[in-house]
Length: 385
Image (cartoon, rainbow, N blue to C red):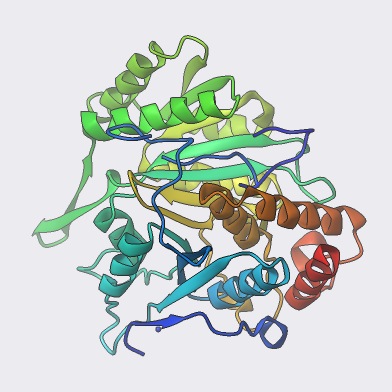
């Protein structure tokens, strides 16, 4: 929720292992929500997560690029903060053909109901296979992608006091994965929009706004050109808005939105949009607040939630160089803690993040400094203790 002007943030063959000691020293938020019962997303009820002896079991998918370094940071911080969480670790590593078996990760998430994930790399030139991220979201029907674009005081950014929530439909649109070549040199790529998918993401957005004291929902679309597909999405949002009289509703064409959010981001509150537009706009939103290293996110289904940085950058160029900013992964993790009912631990970690950033003594490269990832993590640990 908005509170005191501060953001509360909310592989070898695939194998699963229990939590190991993180090697962070060597390698190197936000609104509260959870999905509603039944058809609509629930926002205030925790999922029935796996819990033994007072400790929650959470699936951890380290991911590619800097993913393992950042998830090691989370594990080190959780240990320092004595967070009662045990990680069920699932590594996703391509075989010799470049394919990845996601079945063990899916089983773990179905069992635990909640997970934390680093970004997974998808090769551009591979044909005939879907993104591994997309496979997981579709298999588990994680239909709502939530991205928190919230300024952190003291973090260098192009705009101050940005406070935008971007909600993206996660299973349809241009990312339906339906492509074929009916004739050599001609490719047909299908964009799928359904009333069911549009209505439930619209309801998620309005429920989220209501539960988190947000005042407006803006639907982003291209219905002036794609009159049937985007027209259906827009009408679903308009109809849903009529059921939430306390929440203001407006809409904006996506190309105008791309300009408006850069020029005047403070006009936006909660934004809801189809899949491809959400992917693009969430990255613009990350740029507004300082880059992908500070943007928290999550993917929500009816009974499973998977948390990951909101801007999905693998950052292979800095992999293994101890340069990555861990804030986005950490704030995604604190969102997860609130989701499973561990808000006090989340508050402690978020407060430490704010204190270290505000002090300005430890600044990673994206903050205009020369501090390492390890420096930042050690600074957080010192603040927590």
